[in-house]
Length: 97
Image 1 (tube, helix red, strand yellow):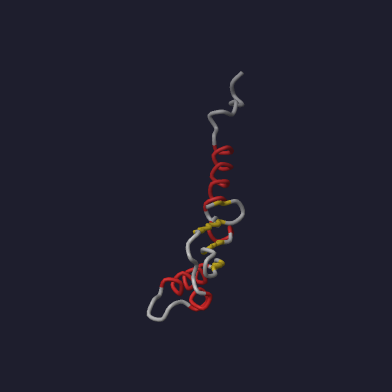
Image 2 (cartoon, one colour):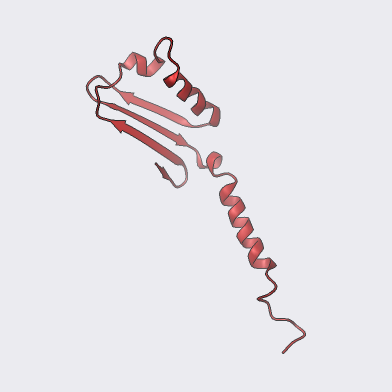
């Protein structure tokens, strides 16, 4: 997992892989891969599944920073700025020497 401009999560195994048709469409009666795709689409993320028999599987999820960080960074920065400018205890009083 990493984050900078986006939040990225990558999972990889060295197993036997997933049949390409199942990786692309999911398995009849199962909702794991389909559910992952639907959830990624719902939040504006990109889900990539790469696999072939004998090569293992790689799953990557990238959530754009504008979605995952939209409030936390801006709010933290604005709170720091407000705190700096609202602290009168550090400012010299104009009526004292």
